[in-house]
Image 1 (cartoon, rainbow, N blue to C red):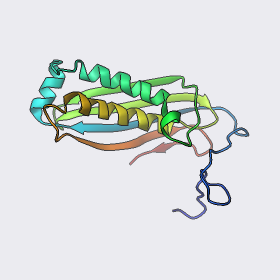
Image 2 (image 1 turned 135 degrees about the vertical axis):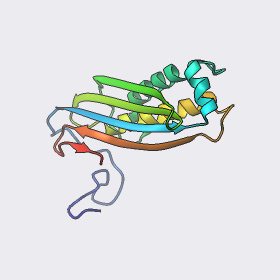
Image 3 (image 1 turned 90 degrees about the vertical axis):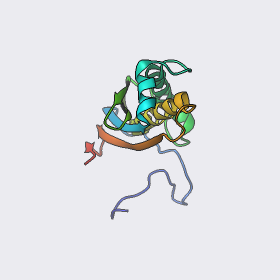
Image 4 (image 1 turned 60 degrees about the horizontal axis):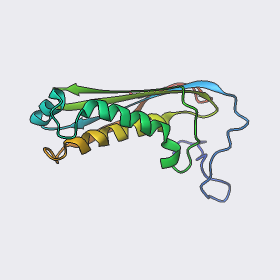
Length: 161
């Protein structure tokens, strides 16, 4: 851990707690997260054609990601419930993987950031893709889920290398 860095979710006795953000000013905050599901070319063809037995894989994954972002505080114990102003999830086939790339963009005007909401959206969208076509490809891999960028708040802007 970098010198001078503290873990804000721990109190003075080392117990987990929700950070008090009441004194922080509300600012516009954005987070973008990415991830991917790597699969067999034949599986991607099924996804692309809309022929999966469970239905529209890309559309369902997009909706699942949006719903997940809105419920992050119910899944991650110390996250604040937030009034999100935007959640966009893109689930795009990519022949070069082969598989799908998932990107989530989440915005809020508030006292805390939306990194966890963006990461949760991507994770659940990827899991939904897996669930919907696992019957034909159990060897799929969910990879490279990460925060790509975040803006706003006292820590400023972050962009992944």
